[in-house]
View 1 (tube, rainbow, N blue to C red):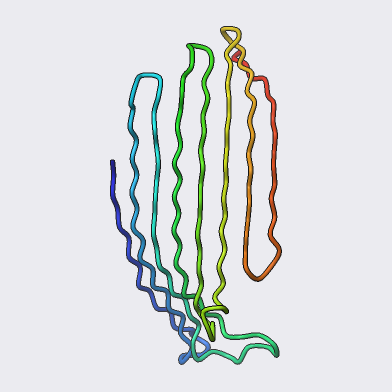
View 2: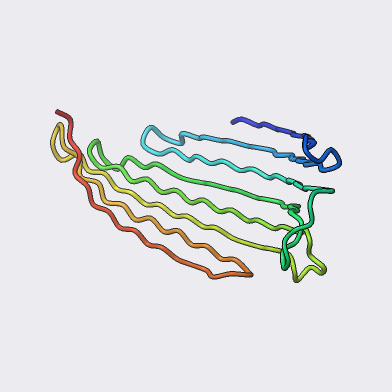
Length: 165
């Protein structure tokens, strides 16, 4: 198991406009865990939680219809998975990743917040049917849900043959 933390606090001043400043503040915490329950079964996972603020201040006015660049977002990311070795030749891997994001910068009310969810699922089975050949079948799903723009779901199926020469 591992834990970590990172903090960033940076300011930049433009040379051509000394009053224009860019600020970036970020705080992120991380956790990682792997657990071998059996020689054939392993659980693994990561999680992180972060908050980030970004702003351009006192610069030139934005173009018509645009707003100043502001970002005040929180992100939660979690990614559990498992590896199961069913036999000496057949292995199954499953992995999920979820990302939850919310940006409150420039929002007049809570309903104006930018909120998005990204979900990724991967399931893969590998069969080493010969000493140097492996057949792998995979399914990957990417699903994006956002409260202001279009959502999408992408499913990808693959079948591959790999070998050592």
